Amino acid sequence: MQTRELDAAAVHDLLAAAVAAPSIHNTQPWRFGLDPDSGTVQVRADRRRQLPMADPLRRAQHMSVGAAVFNLRVAAEHLGWAPVVRLRPTADDPDLLATVQLSCPTVDRQLSLSDLYDAVERRHTSRMPFTGRPVPDPIVTEMIGAARAEGAHLDVPDIMGTRRLLHLTEAAETRNAADPASTGEMRTWVTPPGERAPYGIPLTALGPRDASGRMPVRDFTGVLPVPRLPAVRFERHAQVALLWTSHDRPEDWLRAGQALERVLLTATRCGVRTSMLHQAMEWPDLRAAMAGTRRRCCPQLLIRFGYGYGSGGGRTPRASARPVSGPGLDVGSRRPGQGRDQGHDRGRTH
Image (cartoon, rainbow, N blue to C red; front, side, top):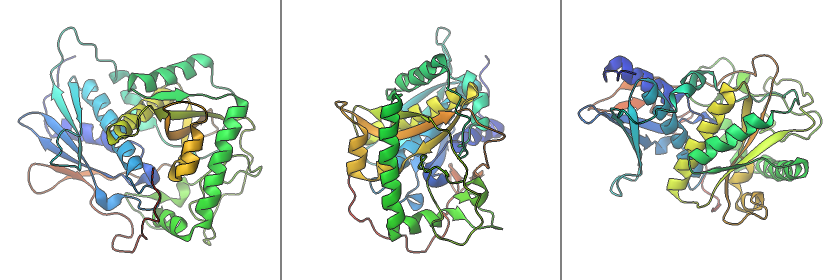
């Protein structure tokens, strides 16, 4: 494959892939800069779009940025570059979470990620019920291998293990619903009817509640008088996978984000839909309980996966890249409700 020139069109393709990554509450907490002389994309955290209640240590923000870094890698290989990633390259700039250098591939280097490029645009979170048809073992094995390739682990429990993880997620959902600060923060990121915003989650992208009460989907709206889909029955036997790392440092969160996106794109390429259950990760005791009896297990996210009906529900919007002053590029600069009080950290620690 011939390496593409780093022109405006190539930069657009790279950033369009990056911003297609999933992020907690669709905050899209990233900024991008470009050094055209070295062919390096800088990936920064945007502290203006963080969640003090759900993510006080910015672990989920790092994972979101890591997912964007992985999409940059996929797009770079698709365009013919061999991306070289450095995580947290300098202690003097803590918000610079990664650099991706677009180097020319050598003859003997295999570009293995470009096959996922078509899945980048097609991947989106499905908050709808799945059919209940089991995902075949070869696909599950491929998803597990995708996490391992990025230095993380993906465990797929049996029925009893799945019930335990969903029970812990339900406990976290109950706590969040009873906490005014948590519900207030979540509602800040829900786009009201008739409004268009590049961040947050529009009501059309929110799924229904599970009429049977077995599936703990996140309730972003609570008691707000907004239109809702009628409750429906979700799959009786859910398939979930726990993404975890052996350590819990910022570098591990970034690796977990890359592993997450590689798993999600692998699933998408195989026709499998996914959604993310993060609630238990927002409470230290419940997050620790998710590890079960595993040693040196730092849970990062619970993934629900399966086959779905129809389109899988609405998609969340994305901000578009635009030039800013200086040599950089920026993707977005404001969050919904910027300037409003977002509450204070109530002392959750990880």
